[in-house]
Image 1 (cartoon, one colour):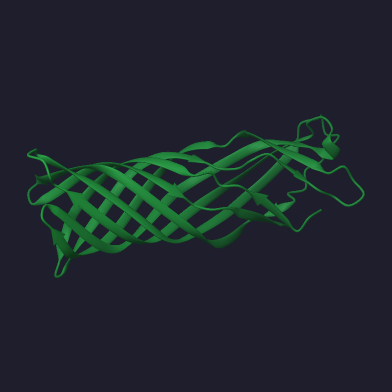
Image 2 (cartoon, rainbow, N blue to C red; image 1 turned 90 degrees about the vertical axis):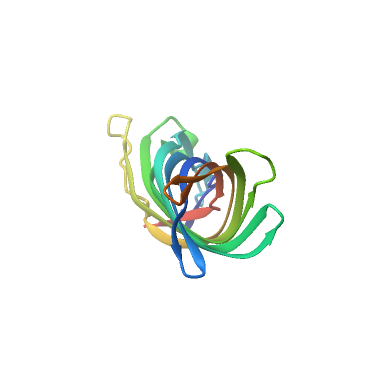
Length: 216
C-alpha cells in the first residue's frame, strides 16, 4: 500500500459571534471570538496497491458542526477619514471533526467502514478594516489573514461490514502536520454594546489546506 493517504480539506465556513475590542492593552486591542460552524473534510479516493486493483475509499459523512474559538491582538497604525485599519495576529481553535466512509477492497463490494478525527489550530498574521462611512449605529468590519495551520489527525478505525469476511487492520495512524492556511471574514460591528466594548457578528471563511494520513 502507498505510504501516504491524501485527503482534500475543503474550505470551511463559520458564522461567528465576535466580541471585538474585548479588552484594551497599552498600544493595542485584544479581540475574543467564539462561535461555531460547519467543517467539511475528506474526499473519495482510490488507493493504489502493487499487483492489485487497489482499494476505493468513499466518504459517506464529511460534515460536522464544530466549536470555534479565537484570540487576537491588534495595533492600529492608520486611520483614514472614517476607515480604521489594524494589523495583528490571531489564533483560532477548531474543535474535533469526524470523517466517515466505506472501503471497497479490490474495488469490489463494500467491505469495511472507517472513520477518523481531526483538530485544527490556525495562526494568522491578520489585517482588519472597520468602515464607518454611513450615519448608522453600526459599521462594516472586514478582516483577512495568512498563516500556519497545526492540524492533528487521530483515532483512525475500520471494521468489517461484510459479516467478518474482511478484517479491519487500522491501516493509517494519527499525525501532526503544519500547513499553509488563509482566512477572510466580513461582518457588522456595533460600538460600545457592553460598556466600552464593541461587538461584531461576522461570517468567516477558512482554507485549511490538504493533509495526509500516515500509514501505520
